[in-house]
Amino acid sequence: MMQGYKVENIDCFCFQYTQCTNERCKFQHRENCKDSSETCVDWFRYRKCRNKKCPKKHLSHEVMVAYFLCKAEEKANHCTQRNCPMYHEKARQFFECGIIPPNSVPMVPTTRRQKMVDLAIRENPKVQNFVLSGYLFLDKVRLFIANCVRERKLPQDKGRNYFKEILHTILFCGSINNPIIEPRSFFGKEEEFEQLSAKYPDVFQKYNNHLPKRPPFTVLLDAVVEIVGRRNIDEVLKCLLELSEQMIVESTDAKGSKCRNIFVSTVINYCYFQDLHIPNDKTDNYFGASVSCKGRQQAEIMIDIMCCQTWHQKISLAVCVGNWYKNQIILFPPAVHSVAYNIIFTREQPSESPPNNQLEQAVDVPGGAQKTNSLEKNITLRQRAFLNTRHPCERCLTMFPDVIYHPSPEYHEHPYWEYGNCAECESLSQLLHAHPDIVRRLTYYVQRTTLQYPTEHIELPEGLILRKLRRLVDNLRSVGFNVGDNLFFYDPSHTDSTALEIYQH
Ligand SMILES: [Zn+2]
Ligand SMILES: [Zn+2]
Ligand SMILES: [Zn+2]
Ligand SMILES: [Zn+2]
Image (tube, rainbow, N blue to C red; front, side, top):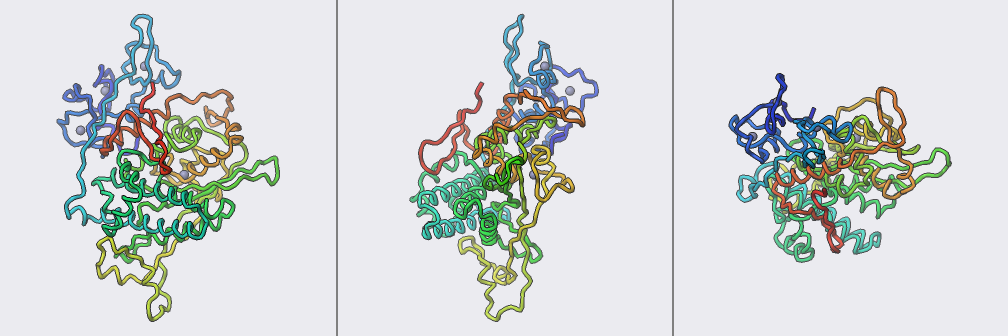
């Protein structure tokens, strides 16, 4: 049911907290962790733990909701059985004994992780790739934004804010990576690091205690849209492709034709609303990019951040519903159109190459990333970025079934990614943020059988987003992020940061 977890490696909630009467129970029954109130970190991070004598629980809030949530609470919104052995997220009230609080949940302990200190880690290809990706992304974005400000296509303060937001997000991603990648690592020269940290001190003070609101590519997309204009679809896409090409992390593997920059998204899309009944009534175009984040937990963190803080609440709900209530869907008024593309990279064949090889210049290996391998210099095949139209995935068809997709859905790709990973969530959220009139016309449907019945007053269960928040906090703790009573979000315009209380009861 849940990706990655094996039922035999999950503790039986009933056995742990009361008793299990199911003779054919498939979950593990372990005595030695009954007293523990902590989640096993290995099990939480890697979704398995081989230690037979492990003293910590193999249970988390997310898993308890998926496997042990009381059916009465889920269906009827409250459980009337006092001795119910299942998991309850809500408090229950009884005449005889008053209020029984929600079941306790084992805590994911905050872990300390390895810092990138020794050379061995520095030379790890994954770490190198991460560092190069961040370096290239920051370097190209800075040049791009500086040019646009110089050419008066973007006001200076806006340009600065876009750059600060991207810088903060990339430093944050480094700080939640395992091993931790320190801000210093992303800069080629020491002076560069000193300069930036003197210029934008708040970024360097807040990257490891304030959360970003969106991934770096989404911020860049936003900047490009502002510079080029919502109406100029081709220009927006072209500009993004050019930037993506510059951010390619070159490798010695001659066969590969990938971007390899972990911060560059693989999918971009745009959507718009065109009222069926009013001809020529078409909204602007709203753009989105898929979540680009290295690591399962890190991607979950980014998606949950957007669910709790960034996206329009209806989109966040659709993502939650996709996760937990597959029989309920949100419908848009007719009709929202969505167009999606894969960004693909192909290696250009060496043409009748010019004698003094100009192509070599295109291979931009940054001076800063200790890459002076002679193999690198011999790469003469330049990679090009292209767009390929993309069918919607099964997740999007579940969440937004009445959107008109271009190209129309053909086959159902079986997604291995999370609900919320897709570019569509971001663009649809922007559409809703900009058009309250469309929000007012949203409806919910409940799928009872294969037939759909419209129902007017479907209440989506409260607290769905709270579940996301719980997972966010669990994940942040487990990657060693400093979680206090509130989560703070970074605001590049340097006014007061926004705080989100972790558990509002
Ligand atoms: Zn059991
Ligand atoms: Zn364990
Ligand atoms: Zn119950
Ligand atoms: Zn999708």
